[in-house]
Length: 564
Picture (tube, rainbow, N blue to C red):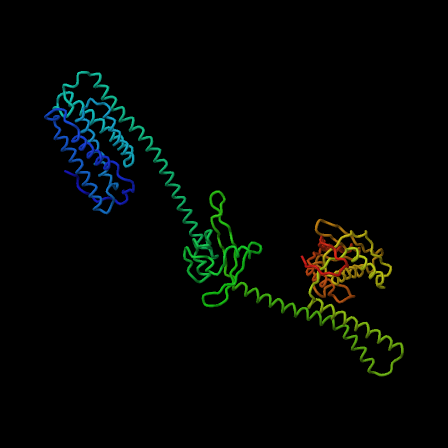
């Protein structure tokens, strides 16, 4: 009596309980128990009561069999079956409702409302055309049952009998109202189903987009050469790409602490950031030293709350080794170039000294010749001594000693040295009175820096009709700018770019290391230096000095203070 048992389609099985079967199982059992529990209306019972109970028992047995069948197939008792079984169950539900209405009275209009259930249930499993078909079937079954009883085609059954119908308008009302309820429910279900189908399509598209984005993210995540590790707020790994595992040479299991991989606590890692990056020395699995560098990024979830961290890192071992080799090569090249320049600078005075020695070896010389030879020996010896002294200062500078110095004292000392130097005779240094400020610097280096700048300005003024050197000052909130300006020969842009390179001054006088020492001292003291020059119009060198805002020591230039 049952249709053939086709295998269930696993794709059609859903997790939600199958409503038609659950309704029929509960309704059949409940109606059967209710009928047996109610008192008899007549000594012999209602007509057809035995048939009614037998049909209910058969419906209940069929429902139990279907639930058992699902269990035998490894599914839940109320698992959703294939579409064929869905239609079969909806038909049986309509038959059960028709049987109940026929027994309890076809004149009970409120009972026809129960037909709405199979219509509503069909919305979860069938398409729109089949939903309308269920509504038509339910209305037709109700209409047929009522007409068969009212026409006398069916004998009395329960509370339904032909003699009970004496009011045709009431009959029309019952039939029309029942059909109206069923088709109204079908209309609502169809509208809802169309809306649900639209939502399902949108959801399917969204799922497709999310799937594509997830695939793209996974491809990017796994294809990157940098190691990517995400960790939660407890510092435990939540994901890691293949590059991270390859760089560290070990598996990065989800849930393991990032600290155990050599990165240490995230708080300590964040404190090591320099310009947004960190660098760590790790022990590789084979025992070699491994240098890892990268970034630590905060991950934020909904509402901007911190949900974890992303560690992005690269293996810098080879790059650092290459950098070290490059630096060594550059140092060796620099030493070779500097040595060649030094030898070139020493060659000229040494040639003069050797020439004087050869003259002295010849024996007695006239007094004038002896004086000239001794003068040359003294001058060239001083030149060699100055060259060696500047070279040692450049290659092996002493430790910097930063302390507060009064700016006016610096300028007064410079003016005093300048005025006592015979080479600057008749060439005054002009400019306004310096502001009464204290600056940070090394007293020895400060004097040497400004002396070299003034000396270069003097050399640049050779042959200028109206030579002038001027000191200017411009105080700011935390610094003061001191400018040394001249109207000398100036220099080209190419010469200006090389002015701090050793032995490239372009002046015949001096050792060629003055501006190199100036640049080195300025860097060591934490100052800044700027230079502007126009060929034929002069040069302006500006020094940016940090202002000291602390307590002034009782004795000027006596107590050292830490560098900023």
